[in-house]
Image 1: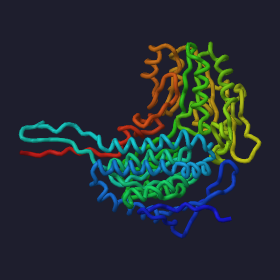
Image 2: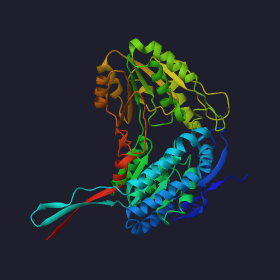
Image 3: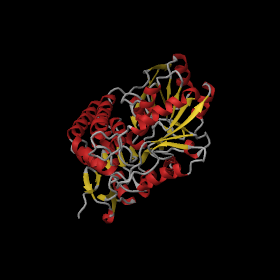
Image 4: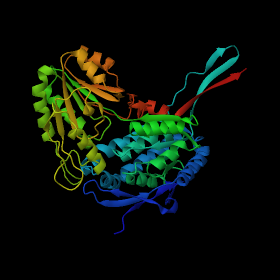
Length: 475
């Protein structure tokens, strides 16, 4: 059987990898191969960077209005092809089709539209005379060729988070999607080649060697990665040799702090939604619940009910909330964390691979864990929630901040003063009250600690793809 093939997009043209090297993509629902993609070499990366560098000469000179119009056309094109892009995405990821169509494609298109408008409102400080007979001001300029490396959990959306702000700011992009899920990104780039000038957006698929070649390429002025801490360190090391800029979003281990005055039923529903969406394969997943000891029995009962009521299924399951994990390796890694639980811990529900083809694990709740346990300190990246208890605010804050990650957190309480204290003191890049990890195009997303640095989304995300120049004119 001939499998669908997703080639590179370089200079607006589909191109096979050197030597026609190919990767095989497997369907997480069945475990069977479903497509092939280019397995790019350093020479393919070089060709893409060359195309991007050539395009940058003219793209950087375009007006904000021109860039806005190009991005609006891109958004309209993605919206028009939403069904096709969703079908490709679910084959690579195993996600429920309804979730992709209703909950992922619309915000993805909106994010492109946001950056289209944001291209016209980049700001510098006022021009003025700060020295006698000297007028000074600030230019905010494009950086150059931006290398982008995206993960497999939200392939289409994460690609937009990288290329849309970079292109809106006047940069050109070479993007490498995850080798596990390249298809929707390649198809998107193929579509956008009809509305963006050749070379503005290039896609080269491949594995770690391809990413390393991109991060180290001398034409790349900035490298942006969403991925693991290990990958972030590798990219930062590769870029450091030539002091290239880096923008790293490296995952999280989000606490959800539940006080005894919270609406426990609403908290359990909200946390379950934040934990089990996309099979927990989300850097913002509510993986660590910290609950007041007096409320713990009632809350665990409510969380178990919410977990057991979460429908798991493949793309065609109409009411499924999440599908399989992305690969057998991902499933085995999460299963290993559960297998190595200390004897005092207990699995309240879930915890065992579903007896069906594919890489399915049901929503799981674990109690009896302590702060130094592996499953508490690690980023689980699967449909698993741990529950710990605390006695007072000080202990809750210590437990919440007691991991090296710092991406997102939530606090659940009816006490306004307490909510404000935790918004201040939780050491995470995004903190919410009585909801978990809401995300809108206008607000920045990014973390502290080993969750990395730099912001996606919002005007801060756009500014991260610019450089600031002081300009002065004597008179």
